Length: 389
Image 1 (cartoon, rainbow, N blue to C red):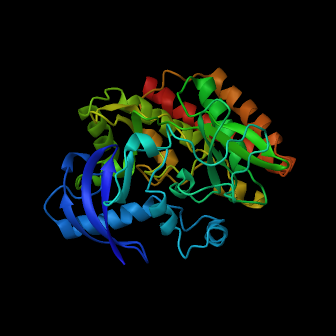
Image 2: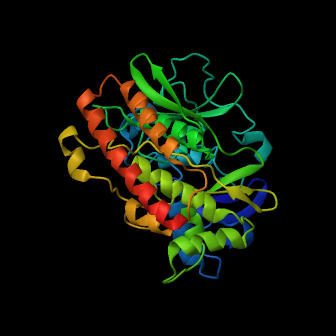
Image 3: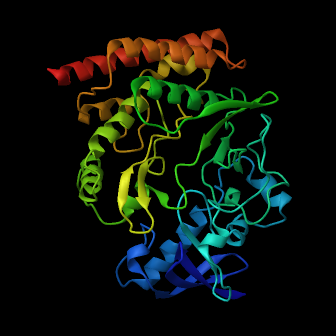
């Protein structure tokens, strides 16, 4: 069965397209109404066929990731063959950006359906939250339009905040929620703006909790969308990204990106891909307001490395943002005015205290992690002190 849909940005009509409502594939674009409000990554030119292919990938990318541990459980729970169906039934609505879509036969307004202003799922006010999706989740829901491989769940708390609960992918250690809390505390110590993650527990299961960065007026646009906006050829992608931000009115972009690079090295973040950093945009006038606060730091501090392999891995870690190495990426940053050696010592205390809260971690593992973090601090201080001269 083929249905006609309209992609919207808030109440602005953007694209009319057709979709197969069995496999939920975009079959083609009938009309591009507003090129200015196309999601980044969709071709701005006249290649309608290519734009349709990209729109199909974009819609599928808004849903639950194939790598989610609980994906099969979700399909069984809601009796669907594929989670794309849940994305479509939720109209692509999330609590990150302001894009959505619906059947053209329907007359629906953004203010009546968006999850920044409207109720969804079950409000939980106790400590016993749960990041997994259960029967309390109703369709439509932002919980069917959220990416990432970790079990997670959006709720509305007692203060009417939209809050994300995130669990663990490595069940034997469940270290990711502790890492999120540790990274938040380190950045707070350094005076770096970040999304604050609180450590919570549902009985004995740890999870992290954070508020959304977006609201009904401002949306998050990730770096991947920005990189996909145009062909940057053989340009240095670090410089290209900063220049793009500056050209769009964010003059202090380098300072904020350098903070992210420094923190990623110190904690050994292996998952700073281009979906995990970006900008905040005014969705009415499309003005770029600021660099998004640093978020999503759980895949760090050797979260997925066995105890006996920690020393073997050493101080460097995979970098997915601009370079292949978090260590080598330090070479591009300026001297950080926010850092001093006394704060470096406090990093060790924060990591030690944070990891010690995890009853699944042996003291031997924690000591090995601390040893590597100490070496990273030494290397970091040597590099930045050379820049100071």
